[in-house]
Length: 247
Image (cartoon, rainbow, N blue to C red; front, side, top):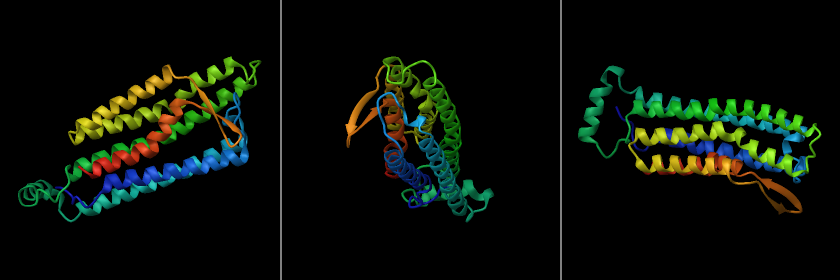
């Protein structure tokens, strides 16, 4: 069976997740301004207060994302519960025959499968990312305690080259979810977008160097893999959701 086009279960979940991620970025931006200064060669993760605050905010974000997808799962189950499981196929045939313009592109089962994929990526992979981030923080802390000067070109180069590993897993997971969504709805544009995003991340990871900007008297380092990741989990998710809603 199909659900109504007006019942935007998956896209609502993606939009709400993008909003949660955006709120996290705003909160952490304020935390960084209040608790520490960004200077060349001294990453925020060396500030214990910022690191602890980041872990707390990330935990809240993952929990809220879990609630978003739990609610989406409940909405989809309620929409499907009006018909007996044994009658799903027959109902789908009737909907296709008598109301082809009022139902969603995907069957309710395919929507359920996509919902599971996105939930696994945005909740499960987020947990893995936070664990990897904690290990990366330990690495940078140990590096800072070595004989290597944090202001040296070597330290900055090591930080820039290795920082991409912190975001690689989660970024690739989101890209795979976009590609899988394109396969499900038979949409070439989503597949192309996924490939372009993958190429952009690989380029940023392998070629582009860290840049610095001065904002409000504070010097901040820009690592392009980080920029791509944070843009993807906010603006990217929102754009994908709005695109899917138009289908």
